[in-house]
Length: 141
Image (tube, rainbow, N blue to C red; front, side, top):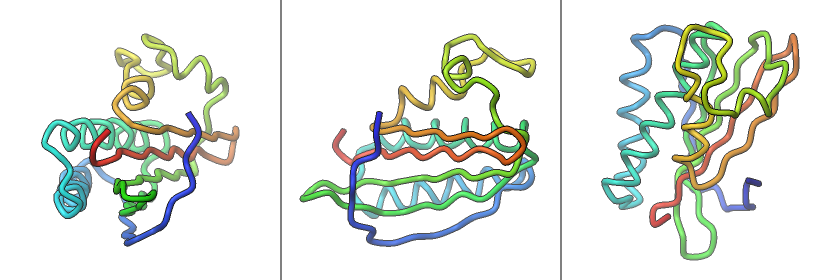
């Protein structure tokens, strides 16, 4: 899925460098979702995807930075999360997006699960430079 051009309404950056950073990050994402009147089901999808991506960033890249943005497209509002790390990168992004694929000891559902939970999903990764994952969850979609 391609990310749609949008208008930026507000932005916040958070570092996620330890497991203890995940809960405050999740809480901040929830605050943003509540501000745009996102329903509980979509909040849950957004927070679940955000948690998966933050934990991936911790596990594979020793953390990184996440930007949390409130965005608008026409009359629609949403939350855009951008996860940036300087880890080893992903050798085969298409393979990493398949259910069950994992280079660690996990079920391999993090990236493909996050992609399913998001309204829009984009990933760019370069070996030796890091990975950037951007998701959007629209308040009503």
